[in-house]
Image (cartoon, rainbow, N blue to C red; front, side):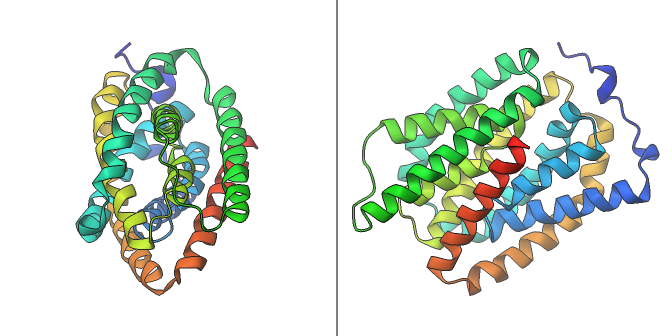
Length: 256
């Protein structure tokens, strides 16, 4: 299983200028999503998958996500709410292991539409709950972190697509903007680092993919810096609308 399938043996020297441009835009959006507009990163996934073979693209994206995570954690480290992380992480780790086990038995084409539909349903429930109980406290039931944490773990391992699910959880918990970004930053840094040995074992991270990661790192940092400026200027309500809209758009892209 550690052997790299033929479709993953792409040559960095065969990438055209247009393909590099697509990867650069994707890297910028990944950085932007980590510090300013959570959920925007899901928009980069289809772009990368259009340039790099689908399975290999998951390994290419992972180190890029970690670069953005490190930048976000460095900036928002004091704003994380560890209570929510402690609730989520055990279920997320279980989800990652489940996703790792089933990854060789399901294709992206089968998985992504299902993820998209689930996300849209959850978004609809969140919006309905917000309007019908605007002043209600955040739910304390254990099924919320259990369900969403497990779902996020599975989807992040299979498709790097846990962003919309985490958006739903953090919005449901009614976290303020800085705590929203800081908690999400720590969550994704931890789970993405945990995914590295599993992805490497499956041959999804290769020397070629790491060279591309290195070349694109400056774009991730630029996106992260711009994301900080955007987050500082966005009012709380507008921030919430943006991240929900991006989560919905990401879910639709997964379905299509």
